[in-house]
Image (tube, rainbow, N blue to C red; front, side):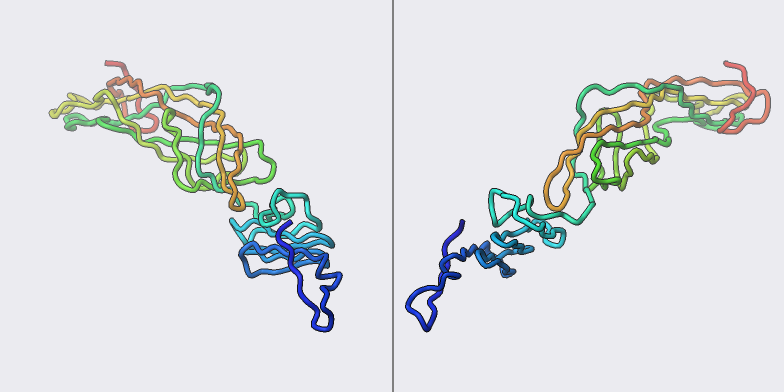
Length: 257
């Protein structure tokens, strides 16, 4: 392993037994360590047991500690099997869908607007905002939380994941969806108080995914599942006559026009 290193004892023309047996590797760093048989210079953490010396990975030098013995890594200059990563953070850099998504449940999502008599262009025109519930879970047992390195999208389902997620934990995001049909009064308004009711099917999808994470400087693939509400974008618009007071949450007692 490596190149031999020997020194001449000033009192003897022959190298000592120690010098003849000791092997030295220079992996390009200034951290040095060694045993009676082997020495090492490392860029990161330098380790040794009774017979071997090795270097921990340099991708995150503060994250690695030595294991008690060398575990027969392919290289003594980069020996992740012989080191332990002490950090438990997983930063997700990409997400890809795998397999077929499943619909867990479906319901109608309503967006209601109370329009007084004569209110010009009252209702919903271009877009609506709503709360999307998201749950992220994974089978990887080494961590209970992951962090998105940036906003990561599952475009087909209109899902954007951002921030930190706990395994099986839920969060909500405010989502804006385009409305493909005008659902509002004319410029002259309605001739009486009306409830404008825009609706679309809202489904909860479960989507199998693979997340690529950076952990201790190395890429790790984590299989998981995203569950999130989506709006299918097929809109229905209804105008209803109000028989009494109206509010945008509960609407009013109505008759369909």
